[in-house]
Image 1: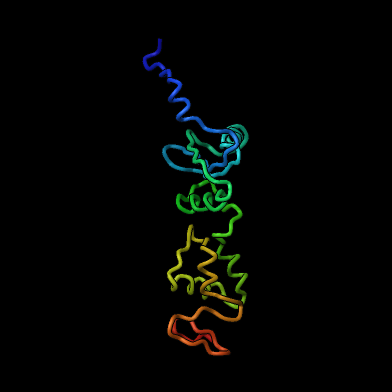
Image 2: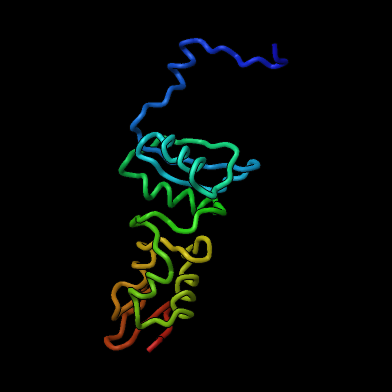
Length: 169
């Protein structure tokens, strides 16, 4: 008999802690008490976790599964990737909330990259992992390709762009 035998659980514990198959979830792969990867699954996570164990180069020693609504799965995964910055996540899932600074700058072509980033920062918008921003917040500053949001109390000239009360024509 081993020193620490596995505890036999009762039926109440099994039923209380069970996971339904087919539920969407966010899963976290953990190595040495550090989250190294965040992923999503529409089947309770076990299919994806098993695939990582068998076929991927992702090294992990434990995992955690958080069930979630299927309609929130992409944005929730993106939120966690940005929050924890896992080493093995290279990209965000397709979502509407976060976009890369590069893709947002292409939307507003008239702005060079330095000025674009400077304007984002000066308006207090957080840049996640040095490359992602919340697209709605950026769009609230750069309304269209031809004009920008004007700080409260300033009028926009017909042919000039005004940011923080300064003319940037």
